[in-house]
Amino acid sequence: MSRDQLEEARRLVDSDDRKDFDFATRGFIATRKDPVIKRPDGRTAVDLSAYDFLDAKAPETVNPSLWRQAQILTKHGLFKVAERIYQVRGFDVSTVSFIDAGTGWIVVDPLTSVEAARAAIELLTAHIGEKPVLAVIYSHSHVDHYGGVGGVTSAADVASGRVQVIAPEGFLEHAVSENIIAGPAMSRRARFQFGLTLKSGSQGETTSGLGPKPSLGSLSLIAPTLTITHTGQEVTVGDVTMVFQLTPGTEAPAEMNFYLPQFRAVFMAENANLTMHNLLPARGALVRDAKAWSDYLTESIRLFARKSDVMFAAHGIPRFGQHEIEAFLISHRNAYKYLHDQTLRLMNAGFTSAEIAEVLKLPDVLAKQWFNRGYYGTMSHNSKAIYQRYLGWYDANPANLNPLPPQPSAERYVDAMGGAETVIALADKAVKAGELRWAATLLNHVVFADETNEAARKKLADIYTQMGYEAEAGTWRNIYLTGAQELRTGIAQMPPASMSMDVLAATTTPMLLDFAAVRVNPDKAAARAFKINIELTDRGERHLITVESGVLVHEAGIADPAAGATAKLTRPDFLLTLLAGAPCAPRIASGDIKIDGDASLYEQLTQLIEPLVPNFPIVTP
Image (cartoon, rainbow, N blue to C red; front, side, top):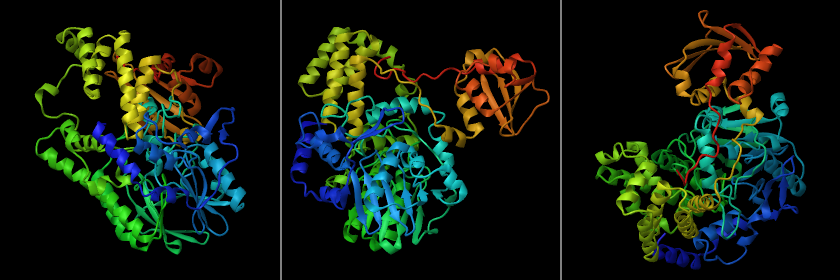
């Protein structure tokens, strides 16, 4: 961020009408006396006191606009949003809502973890009274909106029919598949996006711009019992009727808003936020559709805006008053529409993604609305995502068709510029001129040419730190500061991300075999060719696995009599030996795995699957 942009941010904060602070505190009832929410193993899932440092004026180490946003997002506790509508905010990156349906509660988006969700409903019960949960709504297919369901209900209560679980069409498929195949890479990159290894503070993580740091507790998932298939679908739970709007392909592949006619209240899921959202998260995902997003907001305005007195959502704070809600939704819609249309205009005029990102800015009438500013997604990142969605990564310049990878490219750049000392001197000159982006580029080349160059690493870490301090986006701040941390102290050695048992149970065997296929060592596989039948005895499933030409192909419901072997085992044993690296021999010897035919083929299959690499380098080669 330039000095002019920082000064503009300071002026905006100084002239703030404090309306969002009023909305953020309106209806406050109480918060937890003990700020620490524990996991069963005693470790901390949530520490509500982690953001106490925000009770002060913005220091020089945090962009004043982001500081203001963080102050609003971290106000925690139980809030009355409207008659019979409550929220618990600040316990997680997302917000959980509770709707009083007369004889019980409708729980909307039960946070990321069981521990956070349980603490939220306990706070509600302590201050409003105890009622059973009648229904849980998942507004969309991201884990921070369903992962805590086990804290508010149980699989037994759902199976008995006492509790409904309501979700949009396609929810389960996307919830369990989105992060499986590319899960290891996404998990590693998520450390940067959310600042997961940074300490919260004025020199560290200061929210992601969307909400507090995600809770670090137990994940759960209960499959939906009622699917929303079309806009206008009505569902009544207790004495509350909800009218749904499907919005697939917006912030999530499966997502929906809903309206509460008797309360004149609209729930906007994650389609309308206190920030411009991501079209492509820094952690990675399929690119979201900015045009569909703006079009569905147009539909929301037509369906709900003029008959709503309260708007609440899955992140951030409510908005109050029909005029306020309509103006908010129109402005927010216009920001996504402008972003999409002007990116396409410049793209069609021959601009590349980097060139578009450099010049594209929202007009003042949109940019000065706090909720359109880039705290989580940015105009720069989002315009590049739109370019990628339509045209892909290639900018049509032949020089960029087959460029050198970062390390050999860096070695040649440094050599061509006269060696590491010369490049470091040029970076120092750039820093003095305030050209931090150019200085970072120069020093990144030195580090990738020689990762042992401590002088370059330290200088680059210092530059990333300053860029993080200046960033308005919480995500960009976390990315820069995590990069600086890893340059200084190395990569934090964390175990691979694991799926909870109920998420694993909801994941189909073909999805898990897809995950196995992308972990096949091609050199080992190229030297082997065989077919093996897999019979999962506890599920009555059959799968034919073919290994040939360096690939693993699987077919469900097929058994080939000409296959070299048939392995009969339970799915847990299959997953432990194929994906988790557990040895086969003891289970074969005990009879847990029975093999007809060539007894060596199953072990050969498991030996093709490479172990996960959760701590691969990012800021070094």
